[in-house]
Amino acid sequence: MDLSIIILSYNTKNITDECLRRLQVAVDSVQKKNNNKVEVIVLDNASADGSVEMIKSKQKWVNLIESKTNTGYSKGNNIGFKNSKYPLILFLNSDVYVEEDTLQRSLEYFKNPNCDVLGIQLRYGDGSFQPSAGNLPTPLNTISWILGLSLVPIIKELTNPFHPNYKSFFVSPTGATPVGWVSGAFFMARKAVFEKVGGFDESIFMYLEEVELCKRINMAGFKIWYVSSIFATHLHGASIGFESTSPFVRELKGLKYYFQKYYSLSYFMVKLLLILGLILRIVAFSLLGKTKRARAYIEGLAVI
Image (cartoon, rainbow, N blue to C red; front, side):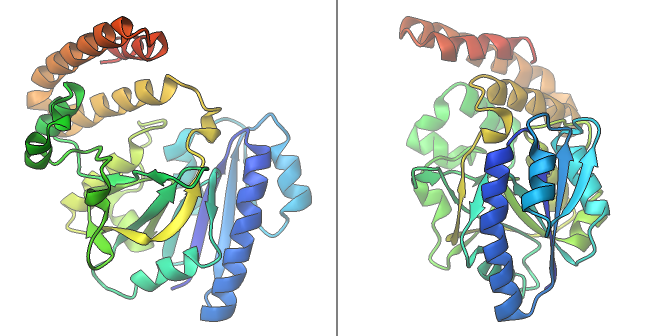
């Protein structure tokens, strides 16, 4: 039950500082109450805002790895993993603030041999619910999503959306829900599982990398769980400067790679319907005067 925590830092000096301050409280708690060993590895992806200097001066208790280039999410986490030593791994975003009992309660779930990967309930900075798990993308649920058909209740139930945003998906009488994927913002896994599937796919720089990893984890027969009773705050977007369009465009790039890798025979059909869906969204949001959203979809056309 000993744990290695891996955090990527990129130009989020103050947020990383707060993340580590709160994390230290949770680490101290789990070490005292459960006698677990915990190491924290921070890989700085060539930050230019003084993050390295801050960590060296204020957070000397962590193991700092300095990268001379921005390795991206997948490669950076793989580097951190290679430097880890304990049987459980937590990939944690620098913009996630854990509670004092978050680590302790998460580790409890790994006493169950059927728990191979764990995600928890994430909340926005204002305390509101943040969707952070879903079903794996398929041609059907991706087409349903881009065309807006998943907003229709009966279609939503039939297609198992990969981006569910309704709370009923995340609530289970037992407190734990089997899911296709969980957010990489808080991604706890057995080290042996991560090793067996080969880690993060470094062809994906950022966005959808945890979904692609969960696809291989599912294919290998391992179980992924979402637990709604354990909490953390996720500022969501802080690590990329809260850019408005980049997340959507990067997710489309990730989807393109995902479908070319796992659904190559049907990708052409999916591509055509994605283009149709984007065009419909451009027209609709332009008519509504939401030009920023429309521009995001225009950028999306260029990457499909």
